Image (cartoon, rainbow, N blue to C red; front, side, top):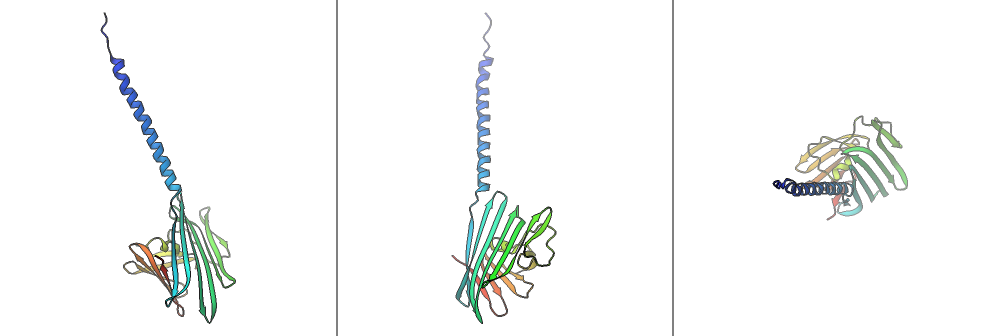
Length: 220
């Protein structure tokens, strides 16, 4: 009688177990990929609101929203300020910016004072350069992709950043660190804005003007 050799029987269980492990690994990797894809597409919105104050009196609000979808990030700032300087003044401003992988791909700046539209301009990254949209001033737009804009200051402390791009003035503005968490941005019109951060988060903006200073104070 030929001796019985259980080789095939002994090898069947490891092969079956190995197959099940491979299938489970593929399932786990697929699930993690799906979870990662979902997390990239469904990032929670971030919203901030500031009170606009002049000498202790409430003059308006600034509302900000940030939304991410995949590698695209959108920031929108809307402000409404009502004050009195020789006559009643209402200033409505809307600023928007979209970034792809932290590089600016489109922006818009709109401002209306009382019932008169003062500014409506922007730019979009297309075919390797920025192209103006809306009513553009006769200025040269940036040649290289923009990384940091004024809107960035509302969500990120500008650590080791020397300049930021302004859609309002359509040029880069210098930014200087004044103290821990406090930065000054000098504007072309001679005014300065001070941005104060606490633990990396913006809590106050001081808008210094010759005749009418304002403060944007983060609401709790």
